[in-house]
Length: 242
Figure 1 (cartoon, rainbow, N blue to C red):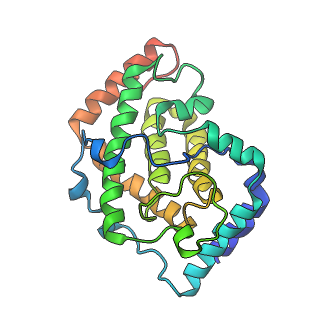
Figure 2: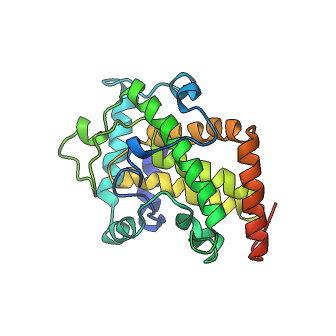
Figure 3: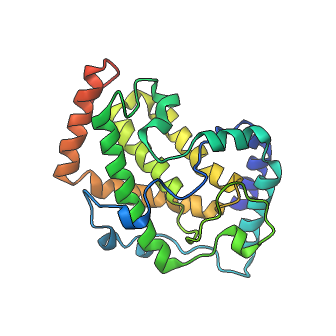
């Protein structure tokens, strides 16, 4: 029932979603990622996340049907916006937070989000390697995907994880934007499905992964120090603060 509702929701709202996912893998390749606040291997997300739908079962079939419906509903405007919005960076949130929230204007805040991205991506990659769920286009090779077809596995979605994780961090810094930040994070992840690169259950797993990672981050004194520095930078810009 949950997935059927998701299909109907995609059909109704795809044309108006803010299409803000990345075409390819995140900006840094796995070999260049570096953890700052957490031990990605120790996170062991694969032990926390619910397993993806098992191949051949009804839930897996509905998962794929949901992707197919989203892909069929994709518009040229969706694709233009997909192309225009690439890396997992602070700049992705400018439309929500305002034009001051860029790497050029707020380098400390941008660096914090970059560290958060890399920590989260490393934790996700470790889980993906263990879970090893094929991408939708591996299950259905003729799926009309848009953009790069990654060789990485599907579960959980790294982009959904980043979207929700960054929204969690930024909502601590700009609490009045919390609702808009999480709405953006949801669309950021859902657009991975619109491109045909993730299943809806991958996105749900990314949301869970983000919550798990955030809980660890907010207990780390180094992260809290950098969060305070970002808050000071934002306050100096007259935008908001903790």
